[in-house]
Length: 272
Image (cartoon, rainbow, N blue to C red; front, top):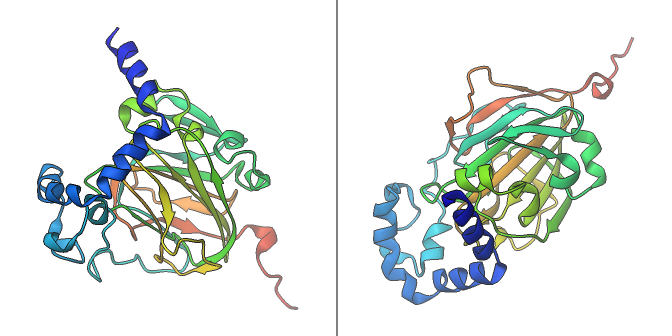
């Protein structure tokens, strides 16, 4: 009964107008007074923030804060796939024939997650990370590779919570919520960075109000207004994950997730 009631309340609160109200408040001057309490409640490392607390104009301004230079060093190596965010790994593993298995007990199809994009064929046997950002985390999203932008797609949807309850008890949250998908071509293949909106997230925004034609490793790509999830996909046959990386681990933006490599047919032919 309790789970059924929570599910009903979640369904009712997943309307975009609820998130719009929350977003309007977070962007108002009134919300500024909540910043110290918010930072203390969620044990946010305010010393990492680019500016002192009193210089942030609204709660959302603080929530989407940048960090001081050097706070997130990038793992070296052009072939290293970087974590695009500070997050908890709530799902990871190989994609099998277009299926992403067992994300909090639920399976997902690439067809649904990528909104039936033609790009989905490239990832049918790739690798997937599901990265959950809690209110404690730094909420800017960075490019996991150096490469050129192939395409960007905005997929309208709901705003169900993407925490443990939402992922376990709400059907197919990652493919029903609003999403902003960026496909980036790198030296060894392609990656898809799927930004998934969530409850009380008024928007997912590109840093420069638009997608850029190319990105450097670790370059600021986008940000969430309140907590959410990033699904990171690698093209089939182009990635080997770190052997010590486990489900439930915390990762930082710029931390290496594994190594990218070119598929045999993409490697340049040697001259005789």
